[in-house]
Amino acid sequence: MTTHTLDTSDIDQYLGKPITSSGLREPLATNDIRRWVHAMHYPNLLHFDPAYAAASRFGRLVAPQSFPIVVDDGHGSAPACVGRIPNSHLLFGGDEWWFYPVQVVGGDVLTNERIPFDYAVKNTKFAGPTCFQRGDNFYRNQRGELVAKQRSTSIRYVAAAGGETVNTQEFDEPVWSDQEIAALEERKFGWIKMLHDLGHKERWWDEVKIGDKLPERVFGPHSVASFATEWRAYLVNVWGTMNLRKLDLEALGFTKEMAGYENDPDMQRVNPEITDGAYYGPSRGHLFPKYARRIGMPRAYGYGASMGAWVTDYLTGWAGEHGMVVHSAANYRGPALSADVTVQTGEVVDKLVDGEGRHLVQVKHLMANQKGTTLCTATAEIQLPKRAA
Image (cartoon, rainbow, N blue to C red; front, top):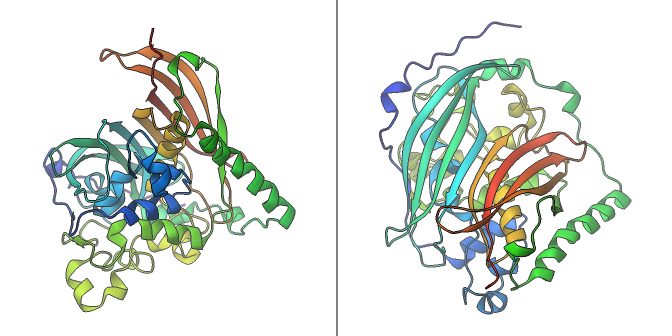
């Protein structure tokens, strides 16, 4: 295998300095929220059914906690992708989130302040020298209230090095029989039924025990169609939704075949077809195995930011409308590949009252595919209501 070097010397000048963002042109629409939960496989009536939402503690349809990531370009990774690394590519490595008790609803205008944080270079089996770069996103509403903070981790590596280690045994998609699909649909509905059974009721902190297992959540098999549905739910990937910042992907070090005009504001006015990252640019490996294999993925694969949303939605769905995730830290270990199934499980590992008097449970979360291969691990603190004494 070729020995590759990774030049990260250009990154230092950007650390700690805010970078530009791509702001929304119009306030958020209720249908933006509906499109998001549909794409994220999150069938919580609170976020798409007006009658159900009106009967909730909020009195109206609200966005899920996973939603803020849709209001800027880059899917949260932009402050973790600054500085030129020649001949490189980027994958999502994980996210840490802090959430605040501020609801997002239709008509809101969210902004994002983005600040590069730090980076470290480590040797990996996947690509040899690899840069783990982190950056912060601060999502605020039109009143200046902090909705969420996200510390995103990107994995930047020499693209050719990833291509050299691609797992050829994963080139072929698994084939599911009709009976297997029917069994999957039954498993899927088990988690959806949990949402219905909890409804508008509280999940009391008093009644949760250390060692309690969260119900499994199953979705898939994933497909190019489902990945494309996810892609379109990120508002930046619909023409004209944002005042796009100008970004030179080749200047960041992306290889020519994976750079192009993705989300380029000038080219979008001339030929928007070639600004769509689903087809051209660094994101097209998600949908086209030819390009996926050149950067180390064996076939079409899902989006890291969506994986982060799956974590948040799984935990908030279990907590119910009277609870909320206050903090989570997730590490992405592998992609959701086309034709694979994703299975989420969790276990309560601690109960505590924090310095703010919040009653919290700590949950260890695991995301794996149908073969048991780990896709993501996470730890989260979830606030639950306490029964009156």
